[in-house]
Length: 145
Image (cartoon, rainbow, N blue to C red; front, side):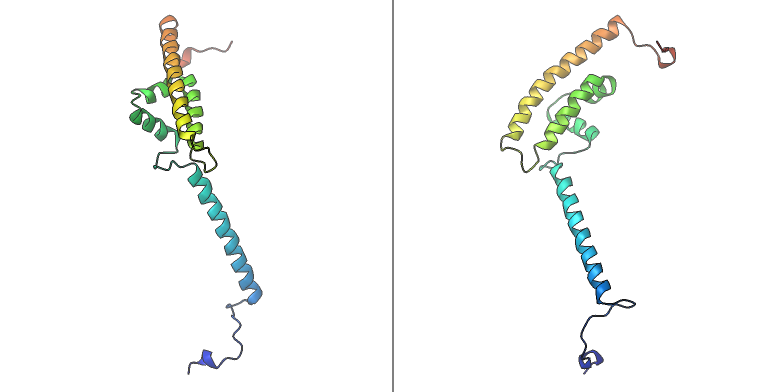
């Protein structure tokens, strides 16, 4: 028979500690586990169920490829109005993955996409016209007003 089988006191002992320390450690680990579960749920809520990207730049590339919007990334680099439109569209897209979102959230997002693409074209036309009328000044030529 092993020595541990002869023990009458089977209370677990931690090296350098006691049962209170063990209970505290277990409670801390459970709390950390719950915190990590909540963080995972938070991250999954912003992830597209079909593994769509969540980072804005990657999402713009994905959007351009999936919905055939060539040159979208270049427009983002030139036009702050397009950045604002796409930021709002990206946020709307992410919210469609929320478990609390209505069942038709994706369909509504596609309607929003169609309207947004129309506005993106207007923003790009406005920018192109503005460049023809007033070519942008180099940064070093800008003076405070």
